[in-house]
Amino acid sequence: MNHSVGMIIETLVAILLVATIGYCMLLNMRLKRLKADEQSLKATIAELITATEIAERAIGGLKVTVRDCNENLGGRLTAAADITTALDKRLVAGEELLRRLSRIVAAGQVVKDIERSSSAASLAEAATAFADRKRTAVAA
Figure (cartoon, rainbow, N blue to C red):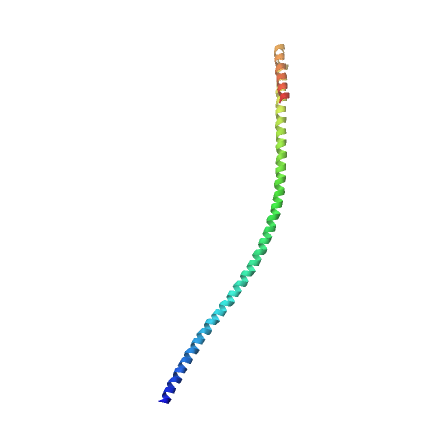
């Protein structure tokens, strides 16, 4: 019986050793997968770091470009405002010149009408109208 009890214990120990070896093999496979996942995770992290550095450089370049555009556009806007002011002044001067020319043309029409009409009364009337227009021109 000693011999059979020893044999049972030896068999039980052998079965437990086989189960332990099987479990160790299973753990080994899982560890290999974990290591492989760790390597791919490290590669992904390295790619993310590289992409982040590239993006930071691109953002820096964009900031410089925006600053240059802002300075350039500011100068152009100032120049455009100056040109607009000058054009406004010239437009006002042109309108005044047009009014003067219109008055001169109207006075010339009166003179032509006077020349056509030989009566003294119409001549006096035209001279009065001309003098009135002249006074309004001087007052304006």
